[in-house]
Image 1: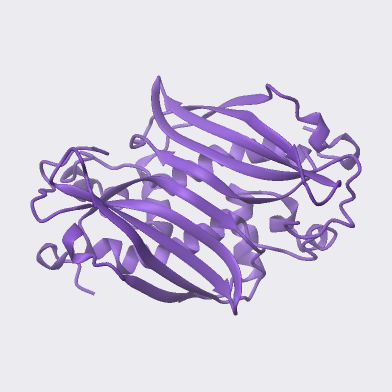
Image 2 (image 1 turned 45 degrees about the horizontal axis):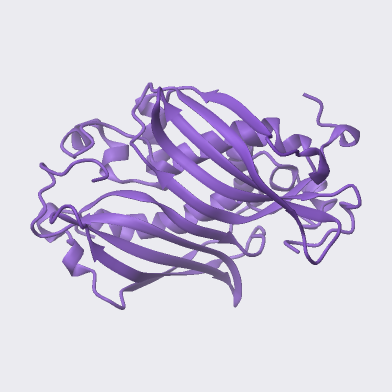
Length: 162
Length: 162
């Protein structure tokens, strides 16, 4: 994919109906435990034997790992090819079911809203909804906002989180 | 800290006014870039020279890294000592300012709401607000919910996300 500046997408290039679909490969138990040891060392993310005693019945990925691995492909394929200059936050994230080792996720990211900044004509806000499913079972949803420059926008003059 | 089962906190043990304060050490540029390369490879997280051309003026941590590193100490010190059995989601997360290398964060986690499950007497929902600041500048806030068993709750009989 061409990440060169002159092919990058501006705010105006994201049209109503935009969506992006991809798969996230299943995790190994080792990948789940490695992440958990660093960031979220709860027993159902860290140790098969301990996890088997919990209501999960076995090892499950940290919800933060699910969040990151679902964001990654969108970042690489969409954000890196856009004049994305930051993100104000997440409006809602739901962990709907546990994610077990080996389960491949089908992910859809849909543009659900776009609006120009009321203060600056060089940028706009794109609201995306990410939905991750294992077969037809919902695993995670995330609604969040990305700031993207308009054609009038100049990366040099843009200020932080404006 | 004693993580043994008989000292673990139940839902009832989290009282109104509960709060927990800690610091998150400043990151090195290498730590920021390592995380970004894996999870969030936007140029202002990945490369000092590229980052210096953006409105951030230099390398900044991925907001997901901020989120994880602020969650970590709370997980280790509070959740591992409680009958925490999962989390339904995040109600709001705000990235208020960029987090630059070397900046230490002061973090406060406050219990903002608690309610028993309407369906099951073995669990309740604790809503926490996490606020991370660098000096007095707000960097990140996160409101999220954790499920914790009540004294009537039994880890063996609990079901997922009920």
